[in-house]
Image (cartoon, rainbow, N blue to C red):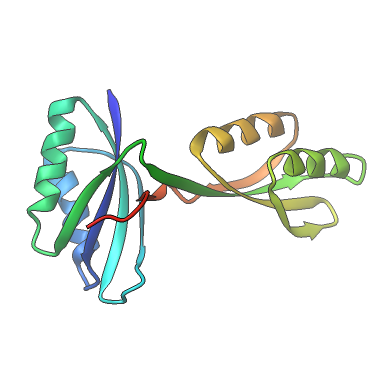
Length: 160
């Protein structure tokens, strides 16, 4: 199965997210990741949807989304795009372990955003491979909580 990242520009009105998600549930498709936010123009929102399937299913998904009433534009993000994800990880860190966790965070250019007596909260942004590698290096530590935002992205250069 292939993975496809779709950037969907939609009207910023109530019910749009429900209509897009409903299209997936009615057809039995799964959404791997979904992020939504207002664009530079408050009239529009951008959805970044990650889906998996064979070529036929992925093409069908893209066509069906583009037919929805509130959808302005659908664009498949590929090599000529920038995709990122945010992770917040709360890691148990005794005073003895704290420097090791900070060193791992520094390697990945992560930020320590909260320090508590027995834990650190780390913020990291990057592609999925970078975040997965970061989590792997924290494997020897007790990850108390972890959250990933899902992918968001834009095509490079000027697009119509």
